[in-house]
Length: 561
Image (cartoon, rainbow, N blue to C red; front, side):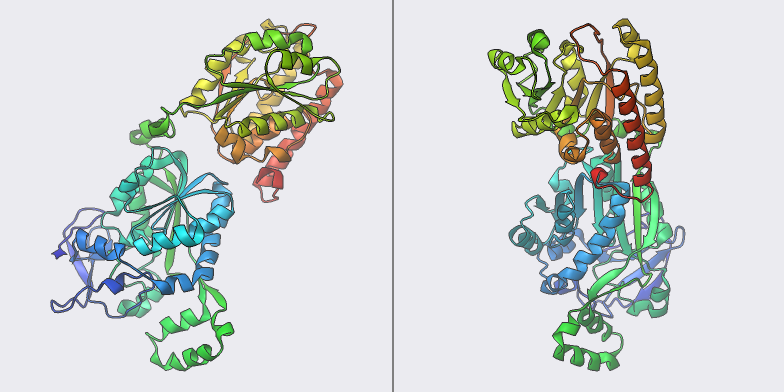
């Protein structure tokens, strides 16, 4: 029933006993595995490794017994403190928002799902893993959280490079093999992914004062970390800590005092008073006692992990056929529409949508003659406004990849297969056809003044946005469904600067960009921005970049959230 263990961090078998109340006639009770269990004097022996300082339970129950205790765990008291636990979740999510604005989030040991529900309200796509059958049932039936697996992380079988954030709140101390779990997490996190891990700090002042009576000492806790040992474990598992802080707890006043009476029986009169005044007892109070470590970390970029960082996202689900939809934002495109349509490779494109922005020619009639799914605005909305309708219509059709092609034949639609390939392979969220690669722009007839302005603006955008593209202003581009559903493109301009704004939004959402070289054609019938509108366009780009800098420094713009 009991297993002797070595130090999980360094493998040493040399340790000193720091707390011992283990007696052979005492048993480990399943009720002590409740989340809200604060029984003082549990029958356990805690040791500290002489080599690295990690504290852990030794001996401990066997894995099968531990798992059974968690699977059968029922904790109604946990649910009663729902508001406080939601408040603690918002505390973590607020910081996460600064470093990872959104995406897929996994909560390991998600209990009844309060953290996931708060994350869902903030726009995250949420998933959970939990052993307790009772907790999973509550999360699914009471909160409508369907993406929860009852079992272990390994049993959930998530794809590689799938999650933007993985959270473990008061979980790592319960794991029999935390390093193995962290390595599994590294596999399922995206290259830019973040892990948030918090746990009681055995080196905190209050722990040293209360010693064995400290509430962090629990029968169910197998490991007792401090800031140093938790950081070492993360580093050993392939992570790089970026932020360490203490974590505040939020509970009702009644809950605080009901637990404190276990340490000071003279406080029972306060419990009696609070029982008579339920409104006061239910009042939520936050305390940061400095005894809870919270660490945020990214995937390490050491050479031995580089092959993982370069794996495509969701590689296990890439065999699914992706629906590709081409959108044509059209204005006076009747003369060039048919030749553009003829060059679109029908073997890789599932649907073609045209949105007519109140053309003065017969663009709409041509679109219907060619059998396109065509929509016409009641009034002219501008280039950006047209794109908004294009993307909404494509998403409504179930598009997995949306390709924008100008129907003026300035761009070469035969390049669509090359354009969408990085998205289909999971290597990119957006791909731009670049006229600036391989000297294609000047060869295609781009005016020198436009070419030079393009280079200067692109250089500035690269410096400020912190990415590298050869061109930001191409009208031939592809977006994944994930990209278009993650950014708030409806809040962008209806003008030409829309193309830059949607890129800035993607940068703030940590999207991945790629480019492919394309040829371009400048001829009399092709549309092109004239000099004065180009100047206005450039000034609007500068304005967008300025807003980006302000947003990154705390002055938030709803458009970029």
